[in-house]
Length: 82
Image (cartoon, rainbow, N blue to C red; front, side, top):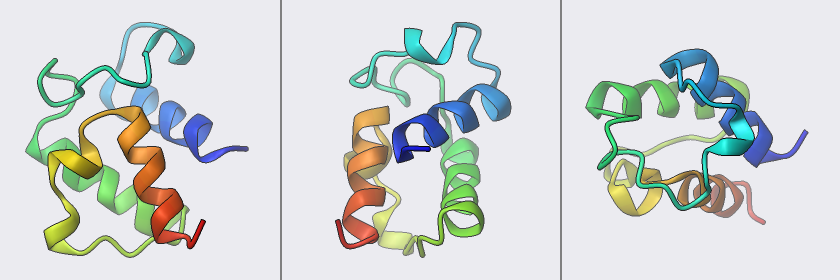
């Protein structure tokens, strides 16, 4: 399973995104659209650490890394050395 599909599934399961995972465009601003809030960012960080083996540093929890599905995928890919 790709990082993108894992992240999309987590968003749907954890935050109740009402559409299908494929309906959430990769560039939709998750914070600006209210899909994620500060608590949600912490939940995603926990998911990254527990399920994907990515250590999320406090300074990494910024919109540049957590602002959209595409940014989440890019962040995980960078942290995993890809």
